[in-house]
Image 1 (tube, rainbow, N blue to C red):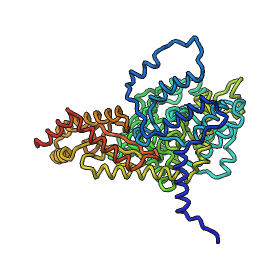
Image 2 (image 1 turned 90 degrees about the horizontal axis):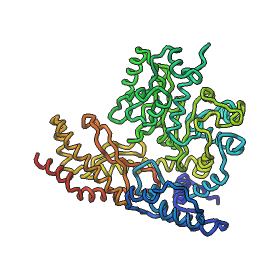
Image 3 (image 1 turned 60 degrees about the horizontal axis):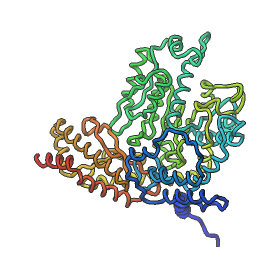
Image 4 (image 1 turned 90 degrees about the vertical axis):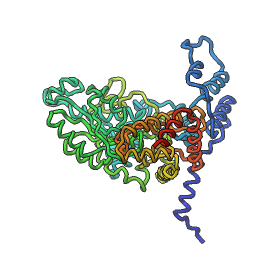
Length: 552
């Protein structure tokens, strides 16, 4: 009798194997030296401990790295390794801890460590085929896989463009910042390209280019939740940080498309060209996604580059269940995705993808000794020159975890965020500020009596009292967050965001990112319990809040 494998069994097996991937390290290879084994074992223990906290202040740790003198005497490897364990590893931030839920850094699968060793040992330089004969086609394939994830082209498309010497589907880079710069660099050069006797911005410069095309200026439009890297981009590209114009968001932290269209029309009438409209798929602070289809319509109307910064949320496309959240991303001219976020590879794995494989011709550079014209050297279409073979880790992860495995990780993270939002909403001492769309949310500690008092002030239109209370709550939030970080049992981050129900005023809130697959529901309850206890230790802000609310 044939035993049938049901979808439920497959899901259970996938879940079990994923758990092993994040918790089980391979035994040290027998060929490793004694010191390497010891370091590997100590590091594995460090990463797997539930809590590894160092209460040393940053200023104390800086004393271990205070000398600017290059040593005159060599050290034994064993002595130096022990030095690193004591001074560096022991005080490093435990980003893999399941109770570290403050930033977009998570646990790494166990298979990443030996693969990283292989990558470093091979020491391939992806700038040129002569230093990366096998890694170059591998990276091109990974870019094709990610391009297909976003744009869903047919097989003929990828057969034609995947390994074309004069085209590129995108580029690997160190992170979202360089990816965003690259996207806007392409947009600028395409807009101000050579025209008749004009040699183009790449040769003539920005001032001459604006004169030739008759523009009074260039601007980039993005929501108030736009990443700070866009201002870096504007600075580097010569159009100035003031040319990054923030468009107001709605109560759900999404760009207001009506105001976006109005701004485009206003700028057009002033003869200021919109270089690019930037949609955000996963805002850094709240994890929300802009209405990408509506933004694409506006970009088409005003004939400007449409870029989507999906550094955080791009991996959601791996989930068939939640892919719809990014509807419209396939209309973008370029898309940023960070594999070192929700794809669980180490830092330094950003990607920029271009819908049109010919887009990169506008930033093409060559040299006689390297990246020669007509070669398949990746460096001819990248901002960075020498780069490591980090694409290998993405390639391996896509094969080992697979799309259904990633889908399970993405789905579980969103479900966990929704669960955390529910228990915050039901807790009498916490206020949920932003509901999760992906796996980010914000909240703050507010005793029930203070919540009632705040609500009454809102009904009465007493904005002055609201502001006064919110200021005190913000100070208490900072106190709790700092104490929690110093104690080292768990970690959440904090930020300041506008909250519609408080008149759009900025308030300080806790911010959590629930991407670590090892973070349990029990840990989430423990974090709230810890914050309640820490709040009681405030000898200044909590008593003031309670006293003020009890007087009313």
